[in-house]
Amino acid sequence: MIDIGNNPDLARLAPAGHYIALRIGFAFPLEEINALPRQWTDYYRQTGLMPYDPVLRWVYSHEGVTRWSALQSDDPKRILEQARRFGLRYGAVATTADAKGGLRSYGIFLRGDREFSDSELRVIEGLVMQLHEEKAPPSNLTSAELEVLGMVKNGLRLKQIAHQIGVTEGAIKQRLKNARLKLGAATGTQAATLASDFGLI
Image 1: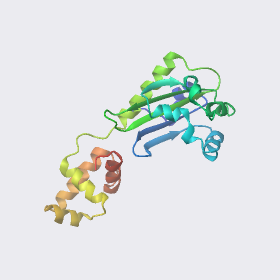
Image 2: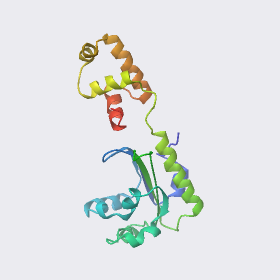
Image 3: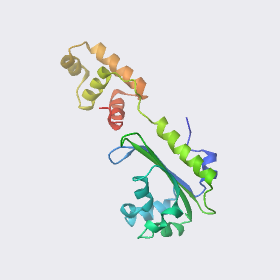
């Protein structure tokens, strides 16, 4: 598993900052890592640039990797030019998605000194793909475990779940424990939230 929090290789690859969004559902990622300069993110948010960002348009219509310089012709608001004023002169973006329109992940990587090389683009693409796969939902949850998680998500108590399904409360606790372990969750509520985020329930 990649530790992207304080990764010195990533700091060398993208010394001006990076942003990674993993397994984006309807609107929000399951996890995000924002190491972009605060001045840029504040300016970006305050000026409402997101709907016009050519990088994000590319992310949601492609898979693979590209340099920011390849996106300049599709930038009527000159967002990439504005980023240069914050030292973000060169950028690369990589995106990947599950088959058949599943969850998507992407990463934006920035430098102030030079364009990204072809070999660095391959590293960036591989990193995003690996992180996307590492955050994939488990495929070994049983239908009984998913049923219990769905009921927990809907606010039912264990006793109510047991009564509705027609099994003992102990059996419900075991199903919930199994689901928690498979999802890497600390509590049943967290497991239900994760299953929901993954689109499993």
